[in-house]
Image (cartoon, rainbow, N blue to C red; front, side, top):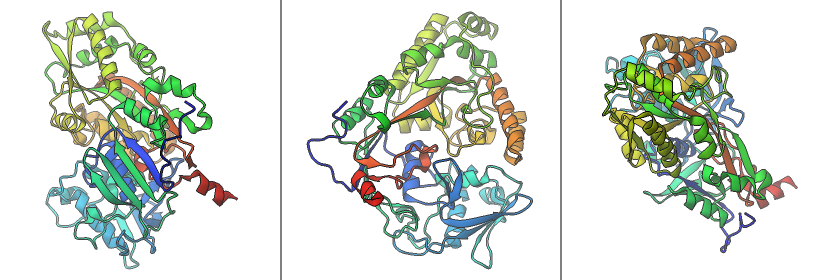
Length: 506
């Protein structure tokens, strides 16, 4: 791999070159729900707060904030130097208008739940109030937010791309940036071109432009990196061994990602609605063998939804591979002999290999499995409508907290686009999730999260797979890269061309 970083034509030193596996379905903060969409939104728009590379909440549009003793009232002071990409000053008015827009029922945002803890948010969403009681601008021009109940995760929710602040000075606020980059060009299914926002109040990006190409095929992304046409590559499992054995050295970063990979099971389905069937499918799949043969060991078996690196994660043991037990559970549930399980996937060599291995395990169990391929937009829409019986998918952390792997994925209010794609329902667990959100003591919070995760696991709403080990390779052109623990908060402002970084250090 000695050719990494070299190309036949010298690249523009001021342009960072990236590749994503798909085109963002939208650049509207209110409607971005996938990783690429969230990442694009975070580059174009700014929220009150964000996460740094240690996973801590830090100021963004807000220069400071205060929290009342009862944990219910937050007061955010807006940075007076903050401007949108047209040069207009941003203020508390923009924050309030943006939050109203996210919660407005006419916006139909699938992520309105991000702000549902604000007092009066639910009444406003249901059209029973013209304004949000807990959202105001105080006499000093600060944003005052009153919550219905204390929420330990509220600051983390505000760091999500969906809580981005838009400019009220623009006729179409989604076309004027409040973040570090400005959209120059978006060619559907081809590329994004972003340019540094000259009015942004934050750290000046090291690069002048970011060019993002949409390359669905893993092989293409790897080849483009190897010939020097990309600066950053998320190494796919198929190329993992080769990259680890290369001469990249410190330019290959490796860590367990805040991600959970799973096969969602439609809990509303006539057959899959029986917990015995869902447990049988978990016992039928040899996940360890898939990890070894398909991923090359690049993953940690999951015994729940919460990654083990987060407080509250890593409790319990994974489902055992036990085909005899699986067959007995299916028989007890009275599964018809002609039952066929349809497995849906997006185009991806990894997804194909994983589902083919699962299909083989199910065949050995006496269950017919059919794999169905759909592009990401069609797959997501079908899942949100509850059509697929089973689907291979993942969940990336929106913020580094166990709550983010539990409330969106398993609370009944989030069925569909909110994150609960398995359509899991349990009133007792709903109540426990509400307790988790209000618990502020870190130790008790971790213990409660671990207990909830285990109880959901007992219900087997998914086929639990693994938490991937992320490998990222970077070219010799750039300096200062560190993987962000929350991908949707990666804004690409902390890195610079190597020559510029070296000059600044001298």
